[in-house]
Amino acid sequence: MAGAVSNWSKASPTLVSAKTWWEKPGNSGCEQPGAFLKPNLALLAAAATGVQVGVAIVASRFVVAEVPPLTLALLRYAIGLACLLPFLLKTFRAPALGGRALAAIKTVAPPDWLAMAALGTGQFAVLIVLLNYGLQHIGAAQAALIFSLFPLLTLLLSGALGREHISAALLAGVMLSIAGVALSLWPKLLAPHPGHWWGEAAVLASACVGALCSVLYRPYLRRYPTLAVSSFAMLVSVLFLGLLALQENWPVRVLALSLQAWAVVGLIGVSSGIGYFWWLYALKHESPTRVTVFLALNPATAALLGWALLGEALDPTALAALGLIAAGLWLATRTSGSWPEKKSGQP
Image (tube, rainbow, N blue to C red; front, side):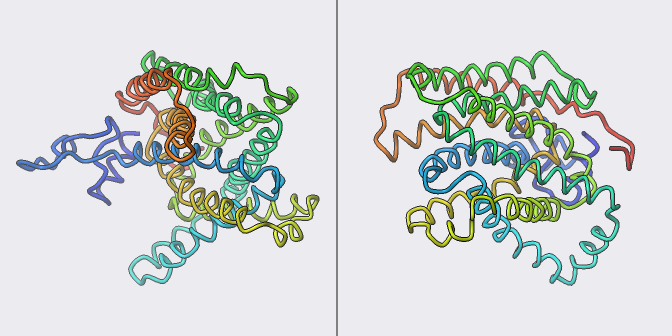
């Protein structure tokens, strides 16, 4: 992991270390008198993604009654792909970058194309379809709590595969963040809600799919440009969802959407395009558990947005929950990533 970060740092002076949120430039071998502390962009990207997921979950609740799960997922990633494509095409049009970009794509082995297609379908299609299906049967609070198991599942899976060392601080940080999520949602969890057990099962399955993809994505993100990988993954997922959503007659449903529904879907799509680029960027430069632990920010984001924008009451336990989440994030990210280095070409 350290080698990957140091190599990337040579190409960009912004990211200087993967050890803490903010580090002195001198730690990377470029000591300058009076230099400002510089951010760990990977962790900042992970934090931004955690907030974006919270926004998308809340927004999805407004349209799941009008837009079925498969159609909503299709629109979400079609809009997200449309946001990423101009930046990808700009890379190829730039004379200085075009040659390198084309050379990088030409070196992609056929098995890697297939693997990235499968991971893209899982991360961007199967995960969100399961999550949208679950939101039709259980409330946003229950869904957010179950989905907060994402980093714990990631930690256990990467540890079982020998991809990541499970330290006491990392495990404690993950558990504290989950406790914070549970505390923040406690009042809503006590309220009775209609639904069936398969709503909870669908959300848990979506978290399992996300954990698996987060662990398996890294070798391909190390080999190829993040923008190219994220765009290709979204393209495959859109094609897959386009076929799958035909059972919901999505062309007719899309034309019949109200202006309000389009506004919400547009917000979800644009934020998802940006958010998943941040997500893959973070996975490229940090261990999967240290990235996914920031998903604990999504229920806190939903609670704060409800208080600030919708006038919803903020439960007294919310501040204590935020404290637990903050402590969990600090524990999980205060030590350097522990991703074992692999030899070139090794998955």
